[in-house]
Length: 507
Image (cartoon, rainbow, N blue to C red; front, side, top):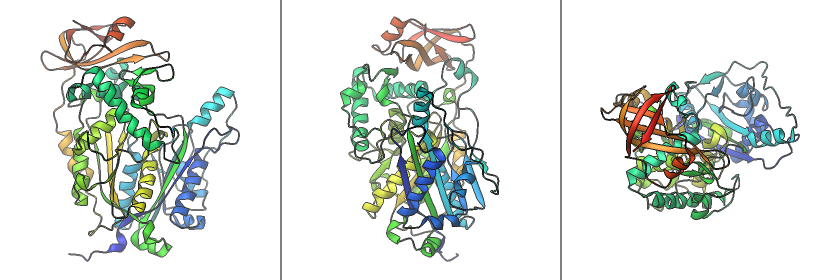
């Protein structure tokens, strides 16, 4: 057996974050500037000077939603006079930052990469202010002359298929409530009991955000305030009020620096700044929501958790700190359940406060959660942390396990295809495209307009022969409102195809 070479172990040495509040659109930093600032702060966090960033041999940038740059990683590298051999730009996905950490760490362990920067940012709040004020935004084009062409990582496959889109399942604010209502039925909660439960779950998250220096909403809210619809807190898609939804209109950036133990020594980074990636995993559930095994669990998260813990040699009971992806409450609960953590476990499930309260900067939230985890673990040497990322509609998943303690073995990342096969082989219900006859509701949601008026009902159900169907409810506001007061899951009715969409009429 080859001798264990500690110098090849990947290590995170720096993390930086920036939050830009109420900036004048004419003076605000654009996403590229936010990333550069976060990278500078990551260098300071590693006790390095900016000049050392010129030695980067990989720069990876998380997909930016709010502004189109010609060459985001090359333009960022140029800010530090770096000419990396590797330049990466990702496709969409909230799992992307953790997935990129896993990819970078694997390449550091093999010697393919020596010193890497991972960064991302959004300035959607500034763009919104500029539009409202009718002020033109003159940000850079992100050209990067002399830099190698970027490699695009990930898939651009749409998150919804044609039949899902035909029935209104196109936005996260509409799709995630389908999982939430299924969870309520799975837990055996009443409608009112689950409303209170969601309020309490979210209130605990606001307590974390209230103390985070980079939170967009550093405000502690009560369970009742979060769970009760009001003028300021309208119902978006039942059962989620506005205060339960991820907020994307933020100006936030974050960056991470990764290297090997050997190069960290060369750079002179103090050991007390090092945080190790002990375990990782990357999986995906059946791609389309209409194909899922059920709507209250994620086989892919369960398998990712098992793989990451196996790689680290840990049990979940040995993990003190968690940041479970939190775009909506159901994502937190499904992640918690996959970990085998009970509802009454006292360990907080977020270190930032989550996307509805810390802020949801597009695909880059998890870079913030990892940077926050680094700070927390350094303050508690020897303790262990878990970060999860999630993309599309509880579709793509990435997991990372962190500690300041050095692992006793080489970093060997198992090929995700080896355990993805187990998920891909799971049976998926057949979908009836033009259903007709009797059906029963698996889950549903009621979509509201910006005034809080119910305008559409979406149902996922099963026919008597077991085929799954998608349908809309009759577009009657009073009838739709009724299904926010009475349980619809398990209710039977007639389903038929009408004007190219399916209509479900409950008994």
